[in-house]
Image (cartoon, rainbow, N blue to C red; front, side, top):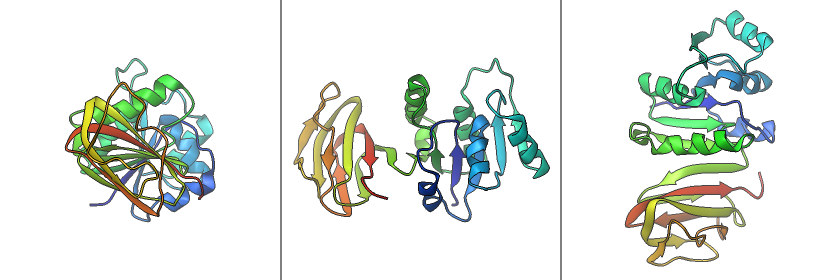
Amino acid sequence: MNRAVIFVNGVVRDYSLILPQLKARDFIIAADGGLKHINKLKLKPALVIGDMDSISASDLDIAEFQQTEIVRFNKDKDQTDLELAIQAAMQRGYREILIVAGLGGRLDQTIANLLLMLDPDFKKCKITFDDGVEEVFLVDGTQEISGSAGDLISFIPLEGNCEEVTTQNMKYPLVGETLEQYKTRGVSNEMTSSHASISMQSGLALCIHTRTRS
């Protein structure tokens, strides 16, 4: 199954770090103003979706010239443009979704974006947020992490505590321990190798992987 890549109207800290994250056969979606990032990278979106309130006329003109599919919603809608974009990706059969520029900027938008991963329908997908520097995803069970020695890793419990947590190739190892939802024990660990892992018997955690080098 190919992957859908959704560009959101958030922050891109370094465009040169985005291109290495992309694949030739990605289905590229612009969630409204995320189209500006796509045009900056000189990519061609397959779909532009949203209420078009944060998209510039010039960017929209480019999409129309390219005969890109454009799906417009009323400005008084109940969902964010990202939520609509994820729904559109799933409707087209994609179950692996990379979200670019979904972090940074407005705090309310960032929190709401991340919490979309808890939607019961969206949990059927492998959703990753990645801006080239930070990678964010959910951990349920066992998860491998690829990066570099010195990269920072934080595990933040969601939906209660994470039980029987064990990590490998981390500076501060966890061995069958509990990460409590309201404690900061899992913040700012450090990879000691190019590959690390975490496993847990129960619970759900947000993993934030901060790359210390590109």
